[in-house]
Image 1 (tube, rainbow, N blue to C red):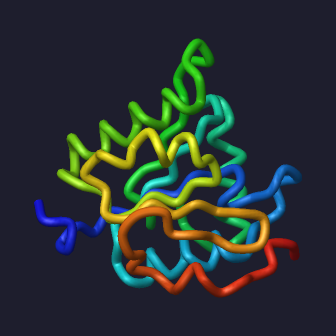
Image 2: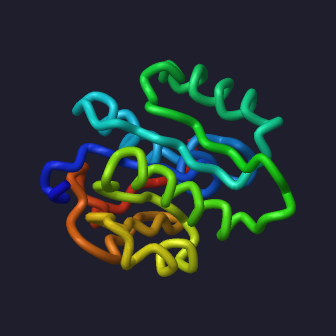
Length: 151
């Protein structure tokens, strides 16, 4: 599949959608909602153990996003694998299923660096006050605009 036709966008949970106190990070939430509104197939991939699915579902409810509006929420089934390795496996599973990923939003530059050769159109690094596009071009609102993450 050509990346221009790809409609899959993946968001990390911790560091992109929420901060360490589980408070919403406004830029990540804004981009998530934009991706859903534009009809993208949206995944949340998190290094959290699968037993913590309720934390993500409660968060989505609090920001008025139905979990059913997402393609999937993917969590680690075992803590015997590192978060980085788990995410790489998850991204591979998504590519196997969908054929591509239009963009990945993550706060870990090592994760993004590990997948730069995958069939991914854009890699977006989320920083405390903004995001930076490390590869490709985002099909969502510009990450060059600074946006406060706190409530």
